[in-house]
Image (cartoon, rainbow, N blue to C red; front, side):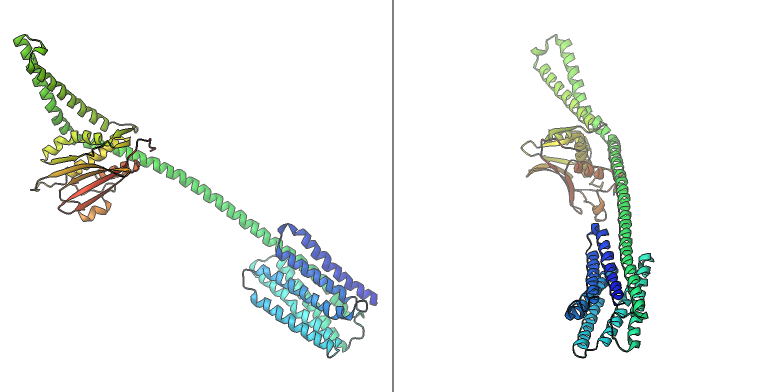
Length: 496
């Protein structure tokens, strides 16, 4: 019978080694420290069981102390591995409890063996201690079950109860016996303990494996869900990008249409200027033509024989050129269609716009002072659009003077070269911009003019910024306003 009892104990060792080794092999791909801790701890416990089955074969020191130490290390490691499932909840307190409880048990066990030679009491302490300690399997399983009602948590709870009940029965049976003559002698309580060990060890290992795989599956589902959400966000961002692209295209179209509208709106005011400007050179042309015709018919001379005729022809050519320049400038400024990007001298642009603005300035009795930089200022861009900007600024300057303005009206246009930029200043000595609209003067449909539409400055800002430039202003109430446009000086192609 003694051999049979030891054989069953060896079988318990075999269960420890096989189950923990199988789990280690099955979960090797996860490279988990938790799995390694669980399996190594089980192997330690199995080695302890081997020593416990070999009393009389191995030294008493190995049987009494090394076996106990290995069993404590094995149970401590498995408890820690199980509590890792409860992370990130704090586990420092349970870990300290395990350390203190194991230390106190080992000290008491050694004292009973060394000082009292009380093996019966030591055996009761052994079974009673592990009966209480293994109840923590049940508590850990219960906490995991509250988080997720899974089979793994249930199996761990049953394993903890089986450990506690069977080891408790063994401790009670030893206590009732009152003595221990043969450690391996068969008894009803030892049979219950052995069967319970087989069942509890098997359940605890299956529970550990199930819980590990259940958590891994939940993590996979979480990753899959996050991936799905990421894909949905990516799709949403792509849709938003397409919508943004569409909005930008619509914005460009709105700017284009407003530019056309702004040109059309400015045509009414420019028609009068155009008629006035063209009337002068056309009148000169008419008068010189009549004089030439009169001289030719009255005197019968050739053109080269009369100085008056030569002067009249020179005036005729000059007036005709002036009319052609005005028509060409207006035609370019108010054309429709796509941008035409060229490189030009910004001073020439100012002269062209000033030419068609002269009549407006004269009609409002405004003195114009033009101060152009001495050197050419090369700019690459859409000349027509930039002409619109300057025309808008001159128009605003002309409208800065109320009818009751009694001082001398002045508008100054100045071009400068500042580092790698040119600066255009359009100044007036009018009433200035009222404080309540200064912060939104460049916004669309914002104006303080009774007949204004609130397009000109907004459109001017859009055009300047599309040319990599900037526009801002300084104003002093009742003293005037200065608008400053900055544009890069370049002869290289720009992309719009």
